[in-house]
Amino acid sequence: MSESPQTRATLLLRMRDREDGDAWSEFLRDYGPMIYRFVRSRGLQDADASDLVQDVMRSVGMAISGLDYQKEKGGFRAWLFTITRNKLSTYYGKRQRIGPVGNRTDQYEMLSQAGETSNELDQQWELEHQRQLAALAMEALKPTLEPKTWAAFEMTAIEGISAEDAGEKLGLSKGAVYVARSRVTAKLRGEIERMLAEEDQ
Image (cartoon, rainbow, N blue to C red; front, side):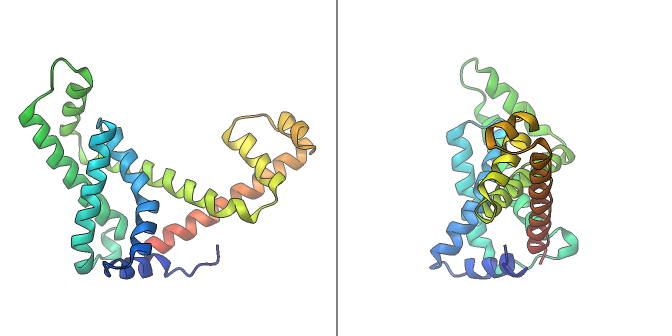
């Protein structure tokens, strides 16, 4: 929570040292699930998606030492998206040459996505990025909050339980549940904004 806004830039610098396994582990933890969900949403099966994530990571490893992105060009996230999109395009190209195996409808659908517009891909990438930020923000915030405050938020905002029912389970008034949810939501918003600013350093 109190990390410097330079954390993301510092991580990228550390990643230039191939021996810094902690930096790479952190990067994979923060961005691996996002890339995986993105390529899965484009029709790839689990094994192919996992392979493509590893391919993206290899490319990041080879290119990180020369990374000199411009904030006005979209920053690190745009750079990572370009690598991922290129790997996905290469994958589609190979699959189109091979063609679907047998009569598998899922493969036909996946190959039809190869012609998607850049705007569609951009939107899906941003959606996955927002999901990843929300997950990381919740992971960072949860240990800093009172258990009942977090539980009230989780029950109502994530599980869809009514404030009244959540209050009964937690021994809180309906109003206290709403206050807890509002407080956590505001903290999450602030943490996500901090992470976005950090990415753009």
